[in-house]
Image (cartoon, rainbow, N blue to C red; front, top):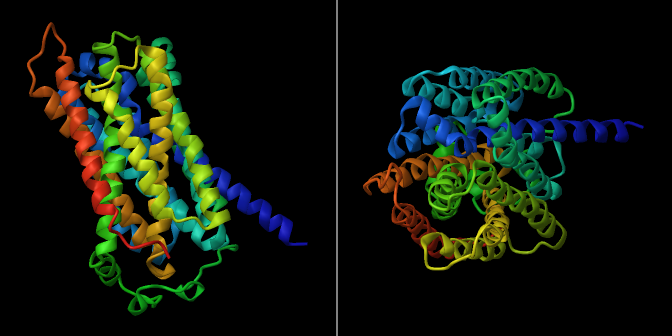
Length: 419
């Protein structure tokens, strides 16, 4: 009699956390569509626009280092309540900012507030759901979260044209605050099934202790070559994608290709749809068949890299309807990279799963923190022509993304097979 109510509560927990995660993704990439407004209202250039976009990731990435041990020790409930309230205040500050410094501080606070949403949710899944469903849960969770990419594209472009970007971001901040309190209620104590590392065999037997300290947990992960191989792949896979989808593809298609903000938003939406589709598919494939996560990651990210070729000017897509399927495939194949998380957790004991997940996520967010301003710096190194940057400036920044992806794939190819 208790199975169905317990099952319904797990579904409810999954649903609320997934919807909440949408806001984290939305805040990461919302600057792409409103970039012209930010440039005009805050008097930005390519370098400062990149810095503003990357500010979210600076605080987000830095907090990942202590976040894992904190999740392992005090659990997700309090963290998933308090931190998002900070993010909500940052969104309101960003929406009302009249200067670059105020907007920068707002973005930093948003990043800080959103920092535990992914890892706190994955930790919740590890604690409360059967482990055999983890890849499927993670893929579905991230697919729902990628609705944030969709909302930050065409819908935000429409809201920007009708209400203005400030009101849209302000509203997002208010909803974020409300969800913080909802999560506190939903994650009430009572149904948490904390697992010890006995639930699975580990290739690191010395770590099979549930009482490792924070420093010990971090040291154990960082001394593993496998972590660095997976971390590098995560860094470049997410860094290049967020630099493109989250900021620079929007201005490129508006300035160089002459597309309207709505059209640029539609292309970015296609990337989001592709990524949303791939997450559940690859997660279910792994859980149902036991197919190698490593092989899927290598295949998917290799094809994602191939999709970057038209962006460096060596291939022509013929126009808007040529780019639309390209961006759909780009998002789809990049989505295979989410398997890095279950690949990583399979190599370490469950007792430090929060530490493993957050350190991998630190690599991902560091990629976003680096690539947004790095691409801006590359673009800014070219002189403006008629008030805008030349196509060569964008093509060069996109080439940097391609070369980094190739290097990271080679490094990852020598990593340990998932357990």
